[in-house]
Image (cartoon, rainbow, N blue to C red):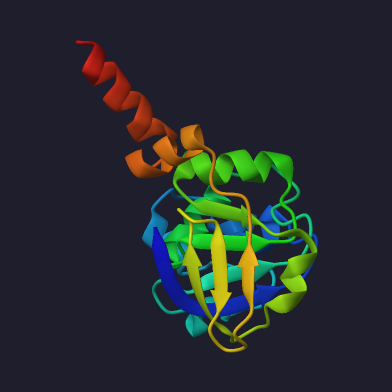
Length: 166
């Protein structure tokens, strides 16, 4: 998958309550959740986001509760990819289960700034900062996780597998 968009950089230890505060958890509708993405961090944050922009985060992104609504909110905001120094373990799995691409780049995160224009090639494991010319190589999405993404997440993947068994 090739994604071109602007970086929206957030700090370290952004928890799931900052991504989508509990008061918005009355639905699983991606559009509604997306309209409130990052309200717990910066009210109105999502107003700066355009479709296919890229969320860039420091370490331990998605820590806190195991809230499936958080990756749904990010996707609902129009963001298909999150690039981070590191992810909280449960968020990492929930992200893929919901169909959100997550790329971990370690200390190379310092090469990406808020507002930079990025090109992310998930198949090649490459992030190109079109603003600065810097290129970051990261691990490709593991094949099984790519199958989940291609299906649209875990539930559609399982439904397809069950249908194929009939």
